[in-house]
Structure formats: C-alpha cells, structure tokens
Image (tube, rainbow over all chains, first blue to last red):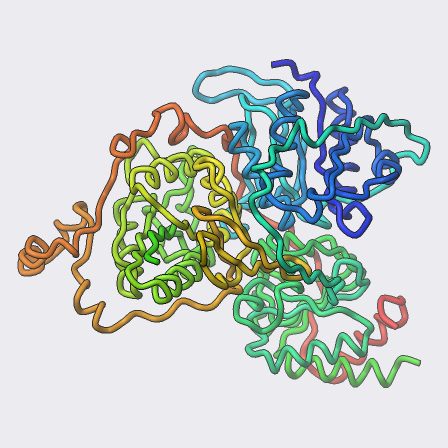
Length: 342
Length: 290
C-alpha cells in the first residue's frame, strides 16, 4: 500500500454551487494533504458543471474530476456511488472526505461497503498520526485519526483504519472552517465519461417530486443565539425564546432533548448531531449541558446560562450564570434591553 | 399482494444516562452493564412495516436484530405491537463489530430468511448515530436504498413510493422491490402495544431466555411454537469469520477519552431586576448586543 496516494473530497453540488460543507472539507483536506505531502483532489458529480472547478480549485484542489450528465442531478444513491467506487479503484486515494449531510450519509456507507474500507461518521476533528496495533505490534505511519464523540457525547473516540483504503470520514457542516487557499491556485480538470463509470441499471431509483426549500433557519451564521433545552418545559415556553431572539436580532437554537420533545424543529438543533455554531453571544436557557450539545457551541465568544439548577454542567463553560427559571428571567432581559438600547 | 417484510431493529443502551463502567478496556461498549431500549427510529420503521402489512393482507413482518441474547426483548416488544416474529443473530464472534462487519452479518441473515420484498430500519441508532448500516446492507444485498424516509406512500407493481425528508425539503422517489428503506424519526410514531397480543405473547422469548421463565410458563412455551423467537449463530448464517466481529472491522478504536471540559471562571447572578439590568447594560456597553 503506497501512502503517497492522494486525498479526495466529494464535492456536493446543489443549485449551481458547491455546498459549504464541501468547501470546509477542501480547506481541511488541503492542510492534511500538506502534512502528508500528497495532492488534494476533488470529485464533483452532477449536471451543468461548467466552470464549477473555479470555485473548487481556489480552495486548494490540485485535481478536479468532473462527471457530468443530466441523469446525475439531482443526486441518487447508486449512480453517484458507482462513480466513486470505480474512480477509487482506479486512483486509489488514501483518504476520502465527505459532508455528513443527507447525501454524504447516504453515499459514504454504500461506497465503503463495496470497497470494504472503514468509514467514520460525524467526525469533529481530523488529524494525521501514527498507530501501533496493540495486538500485533505492527506500526503504521501517517494514518487519518478520525475523532468523534460517541455514546451520546460522553466520550471522544479516535478511530483509525490501519489496513483498508480509502480511509473514509464524514464531517458535519460548520465543524471545519472554510477558507480560500489561494485565488491563483492551479489545478487540472479531468472530465470523466459517465458511461465508463455508471451502468444504465444503476439508475434504479426515480425521483418523481422534489421540493427543496432554503432553510428558513440560519443559526450557523447568526451572531447571537438564544437556545432552549428540555428545561424550557413546553412548546409554549419556547415562544419566549423567539420573543427574546426577535428583540435581540438573534436566532433560536435548541438542544437535542428539546427537539426530541417536540418543542421546536430539527433545523434548530445545536450539537454533535445538529449544527456547530460559534456566535459572539450564546444564551442557553434551561439547557443542562450534555456533552453532545456543548461540543456544538463551546467556541461561542460569550456564553450566558440561565438555569434553575446552579450545578448544571453547562454553567462550567459559561461566562455568566443566572440561577433562576428561564420563564422569569427572559421577560426581564427583554424589558431591560428595550429600556436601555437606543 | 402479500409481502415479506423485514424490520431491522437494535436494542440500544439509553445513551441519555451513561455511567463510567459503560466502556470496556478495549474501547468497545459494555452493553451488558446498561439499561437497554428499543432504538427509537426502529420503532418508526416498524410502524411503516405494519402499515404495509395492513394494506397488503397476508404479508408478514419479521424483525431481525443482532446483539446479546437478551435482544430478543425488542422482538417480543415488536410482536406486542403487531410483528409476526423475529430472529436474534447472536454469537460471541460477532462482538466488537463496526458498521461494516455488522451489515455483513445482518445481510447474511437476510439471505437466510430467503425471499424478502422490503427491508425497513431506523435511519440510525442512538448509540452510534452513524446511519451506515442500512445503506451498507443494501449494498451487500445488491439492492437499491432509500434513506431518510418519512412515509411509505404506496407499494404497487413491484415498486415502492417513498416520501423522504431531507435537510431542506422533501423528495418523493420510486424504487423497485426488493429494496432497503431507512426511516426518520419524523415519521409516524409506532402504534402502542396491543393488549390482546401482550396476553398472548408475554412468554415469547429465544432459547437463551427460556431458563428465566417460570415452570408454568416453560410448559406453555413448550406447547406453543409461536412463542419461539429464533436465535441464529454466525455459523447458521454462513458468515465468513474474516468478515465479522473485530477481525472483519476495518475501523479500529485507537483510544477513548472521557470528556471533561475545563471550567471557566464565571460570574454568578441571582434572578433579580437589578442584576439583570446591570448585565444587559454591560452587554450593550461592550457591543455584544445592540
């Protein structure tokens, strides 16, 4: 196994542009490729891909594989999986990264199953490092450390794939930071012939209707987030959070427990299995602070926790702790904000 | 049209309340030490399966699970809610499997079941949140997959129409049978237990569970084959030893750390008007808000 092989990012394509999560992974992939001394490659599959490489290459891709066909957009599982499986057999990448989106989480397992390569879902960090197998004593250099919280976020596990290639990992949107590598970066484009990669019988699933709406919720980019947990007690009490958010020009977020309890929609979930956010102010209301939640908001510049339990775990990472019921505290915040702001 | 429906279910530790002894030294989960529940989204999948059965008289719902012998509990629970029966795939050599080795083992079990028209399972299990086993089983069986399903709209002419719930919208797709469908938590909740079925099947268990039955229950069990939940070993499903358990898992756990966050120094406020007005003024003054 030659590990001078390259690193490849599957670039998700929707509405004429590359998904943010893919650009974030190209940024991370560039760093990892530099550490390994290999090339960063990208693959994009869809329709109307003219000039799409320009967007990809500035994020540091050295090679862009393009597979273009009317039937490859919108995404369906088997044709996209067939492209990756056949391409990976040819170019043997050592690492493949994809977004932990509805597409990446549908595609990754199918590809990894066929290639018998390991896949780690929802990584929160990716690093390069060595590994010694505790049983055989065999040593491996420069493996991909796939780091992810597990078990409801109570532990963080580092996963490696010592023997199988590619080492595959998915990462959620917002976990890695996207940054243009170099606007003048040079990369080559390789157009692949769809017929060589996808068999007609791969087009088995037919899309008969599709309503894609831009999410109304934009918590990832909101500078202020008012988030509620199970401790809010009810959907009605969640309305208070919206009132505070309206007043402050904020977005409303939620913990997994609050979403599971039906207090608000899944789009607002913050944490390992939701969105990762880094606002300048995070107001946590009735959130106890399960690790899986904290993993998605601990980089907030300032954290205020409102909780009637003075020992709630989230208080440990908060800058301000208000001990009291959120239903009592929030109206006061609204009142004094209105009184003191101009 | 009668259909052979398989539901993949997993007995999972309740990850909302995990103690320190939950992990073994080798970094895998010590499932025996934890309260075990029916993986929530597998219940959503069961409901879709039961609806297909309702709409297609003569269909059967078989629940397949892999785990410890006590995982027969989820099958009994599914029977209480309307499933016809089930199989526990259980064997020491299957332990410590990653998602790939798990899907290989389950795919072998599906092959042994025989003719299957549709396989349903939850989108993901709450102990791993990977969502990988469904698509991997589909690949191993050479079937198409439909993930993130919210509702099975109909099954007609050998095709299933499914509404999918995606991050930012919905999609309706049509897939030929047999296929694998993984169901979202946003799908209809599972129907409750049926009281008659609870009475009838309360002693349903697998061979490993018989010892725990009372003497009178053992007699009933011996008389009534419908109470027998099957137990299959790796050999029963002709699993290749190289592809199961730890040896069959490409991913290895390198290490595990318990998560400890370093506590910050923080300011504690009481819930009174003065304290909160001062906080708001401070946040306005340093332009955090406003």
